[in-house]
Image (cartoon, rainbow, N blue to C red; front, top):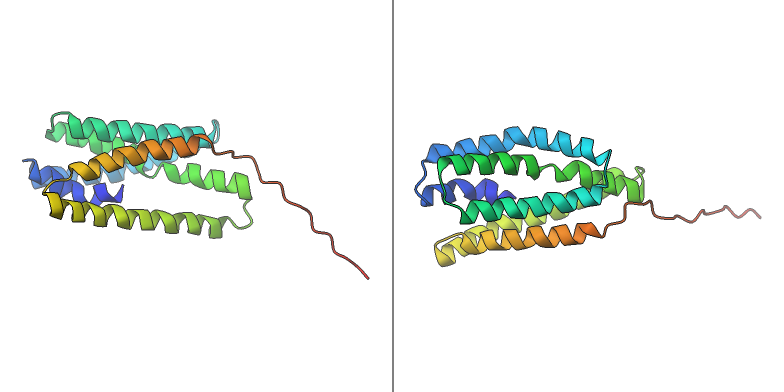
Length: 176
């Protein structure tokens, strides 16, 4: 996702769209993040969070596929920005909800921090790999394809998550 935030304006410019289109797309992503995050949190209170995440990642893959393989125009870029905004941070309340359900809330901030750390490492790889592959090939096609595959892999992995709390053994204090 951070690959998109960093490289999308260049991708659009390389494909003949005005620089203003790229900045507008990023603004739409930010605006629609609010709607997507709120809606995902609300939906996570009703339906299975792992199943919602599965659908979220599948839809991301479909949206990226459509964006890359359909004709590019300012309007298609704007629609892409809206769709990515709806899907971008909407994984956060669902992921935090799963962590809280499985592990409880006692250490939620630490566990959330670990999840966030690994997301940052993935974000770094997306941005770096995007630039590296662009330098090697002169285009972003490979990175878009990787993003599509990763969306499908993420969907498959989340399908099997069980959000039931882990069973914990009760430690009893031994008195002499």
